[in-house]
Structure formats: C-alpha cells, structure tokens
Image (tube, rainbow, N blue to C red; front, side):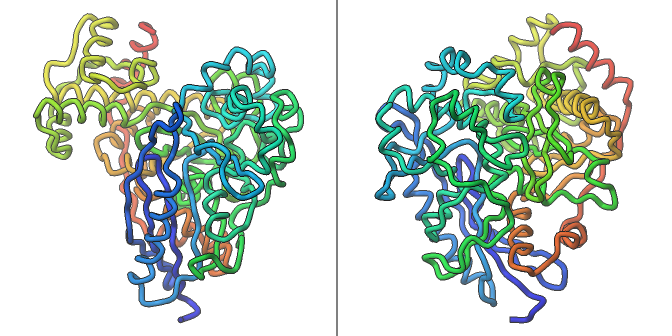
Length: 486
C-alpha cells in the first residue's frame, strides 16, 4: 500500500436502513462508494417498539465483507455512526436484558409527569445543556426502571447504539463523547456524567464507563480482522465534521443537516446555557473535535415524503424530479405554515392535513400538486430562516454562509429558497455527509491526516453548489404573515 493511500469503511446506520460506505483517501482526495445497503425497521416486541439488532449486525458484517472486494488495497479501519439516544441494556453475561427499544416507543409518555417531578425541565437543561424530550436516553431509562425496577441489579452497563455495535465487533466497552452528549445524562459538553441527574432519576452510575474522546482507535482488531475506530458515533456529529467551509470559519457559518428531520445550528466553542437558549428550543451536542453543535430540531422533508406515500397509495405521480419541476413553475401562495406544528409530525393523510391547516390559517388552500409541494418547501425555508435568526441571536455570530448537508442538499429548489429566506448564500453538499465525516474522522484517528488537513480534503473531494438570495422582501412578508397567525 502506498503511504499516501488509505481505505476505511463507514458503517452508517440510519433508522430505516444501514449502509457500508468504503472510502479511499489518495493524494489528499476522498472517493466514496456504497458497498452495501440493507433495510431494517422497528418491530413490536413484548408490547414495545424495538430494533432488530441481529439484522443490523449481520448487515454491518456483510457490508464490511463486500467493501473489502470493492477496493484494491487493504481496509485500514472501520467505524460506526448511528442516530442518537437509543441504547442496549447489557447484563453480566453480555446479553441484553430487554429488546433494544426505539425512541419512537410510547412508554416514556406514560411516566412523563413523574420524570418532570424528579427532574424539572429547566434544571435538566442547566445540568446537561440538552433540551428535555421524551426521546432522550434519560427519559427512556427512567421509564425502563419504572416498568422493570429489577433492572437495577441485573444490568452491568448501558451502551449507546454506536458504542454497542463497536463492542459487538471488537469487544471494547466505552462511551464516546459526541453520542453521550445526546442522552440528557451528561454534563454540558459531555466531559462526564451528571451525578445529580443520575441520582434524581434513580439511574445507577455504575452502568456507565467514563466518557472518552472521539476520533480514536478503539481496538487493533475486530472479528473481521480490521481495526475499529470510534469516528464520532453520532450521525449528525459526523455530518458536521464534513461541512466544507471554503475559507469561512466554522464560527462564521451556520449549518443545516437536512433529511426527514432537519437540524439547524452553529458551531460554538462552549455550551450555551442561557434562559433564552432553553426557551427557544436549542440544544448543546458535542462535535467530533470536542466543540459544540448548538442546534434545533425541525420537522424536515418527512412532510414531503409522507405526501409522496399518500400519492403513491392513490396511484398518482410520484416522480420526484418531475414534481419538483412542477413546484418550481407553480405560483407561490405567498403564505406558509409551521412545519413543527404537531399535526405534521405523525403519519396520515399529509396532503389533507396541509390543506386543512391552510384553510384554518388563511382561508385558502393549494390549487395543484405543484403548488402544494412549493408550499411545503417554502414553509421549510422559512423555518430554516427563523432558526438561523434564533441561533445567531444566541451566539452573537454574523454568518456569511449557510451550509446544507445531507439528503436535502440534493434538492436545489429547497436550497435556493433557503438562500432567499435567510438572505445568505447557501452551499449545498455533501449529500453523504455522515459517511464522509465518519471516514475523515477515521483517517485522523489512524494518523493518515491531521485535523487541519480535513477542510482541504473536503474542498477537493466535494464540489458544493452555491445559491444566492433572491427577492428578500417577498420572503420577509411570508415570515411576517406566519408570525401574525400563529
């Protein structure tokens, strides 16, 4: 192997599919290809929504095997990233005590009142920097202990999903910093676990090992014979690690990780724990380099995806490129809805939900499918702009550019609308940001590159599209009208 050529595999586990992405770093350029993709889903097990861990592990191992055949050089490392907050309850014999439950399970709502009595929301935020939410690991573990108090004695450790998969592959039992920051159990910046939070919720401290840094070699060999690296664990942390700054510092930009759900945020050196941060719904998660991702969760392209499902069931056209062309040519309604309205967060007849909401707010509704899609995208763009205004107010930053990464970065119409709504240039891509950040972190961990080289590699490997703002007055008017009817 040439000393300037390295290969790694990113096991990028999403909530509906897992992927093995093989990346080759050669001459300061990263080339990626998907080696394997496998679907998975939550199932009802013992009355709760749970993940099929065996399927995920089998898919990951198959992906590593296939990845080895896709490149002419040896694989130097593998690393796992996944969604946050979910975990395995591991007994002394290494088996799980309960099925690995999903954050979409409803058990947390049953114990919400008791949780809030034990740990009020404002205190939880002050102690962790994380917005209280039913999906948080803290809430899930509290619910588990309410339903199964015997777990106190039978559990040896709690492992968050990416760390759990790493332990299955190499035996190393650890807690990474970025993924630990999503739990609502760690101190701000996730340097350690919060004893006050654990005590208030009755969660044993001995379940957790010390939190350690990301971008490090976990073990020199796995069951596949390849070294295991902890790249960052959390998929959003990996995505932020792959943002191309193009000469603009992280502090002078804001980011949007756009997919079914959208995360809008900015990079800061330290957690932001002000009352304004708490009341505006922003949370402090940790970056791979140890800094902070100050971000807010927004319902994203899920709304359009659910419309597509409804149209498919009705036998209507679901060719997305054609639908986006029709949306671009459709007249704007010049008004928008709030994507975070609870009615849009659950599946159902999404087109009718939007029609009903627009009738309620403005007394009119979209007149065509193209206009409906345009309305969805304009509403998302306004939500992006509002969140960016909020985060810059919190940080005092004056961003010069918006970086959009993830699958939504492929939607040129949404990127253009976001540029116009924010009044800032938008740089879109990479679309596979989580996998790219995972791979780059691995290459840092094994010594193939220095952290300071990462931005240059991103620039050479991915060519972002640039979108300039247009017609800011119209977008300001839509934002003002939404504020009036809320």
